[in-house]
Length: 223
Ligand code: 5RP
Image: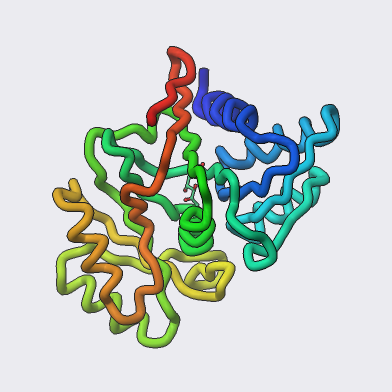
């Protein structure tokens, strides 16, 4: 099975958790796109209704296109269930997110959810977190911030869009750190959070309740 088929399996499996009338957080990315597609199918064929809180403009558009109700996060109470993707997940269920550029809204939605689930293909399951850590940063002084991060050996670079630096849905910039194994994720997360100009980072530590991983040997549910 190729990766996109595995992503689809994870998305379809997660959709089985959605109950009629739920307030549902909906993540961003290519795996979540399959989850949204399945929501649309259930809406059309079974009359499934859920109030969806999207984590990006992209996901909001996809949800609307398949007939799902889209709500502002501040117009709903607690979110019953949020389903999102991830870039890497370690055995303690700490993860890296944000390569799709939506980490800030994703973290806000996650923190306001009663049950938080990641859907991944098996390539995302890692023994230790390493690689790209994404930061959403304010534009003002972001060049200075990049220099500081460089001096700390964190290998930062601006994420590029089509016409210059990529912009998030909140019109901020994104900086990606290219790291080796992250020996102490909590220390790094704390360090990044405290830097002026960093709005949020893509380290999601101890947040997820459940991971639905699609593997060549079937679906694995890790709690
Ligand atoms: C976007 C994200 C995505 O969930 C993450 O990048 C995984 O994406 P994909 O399902 O396309 O591999 O965090 O900000």
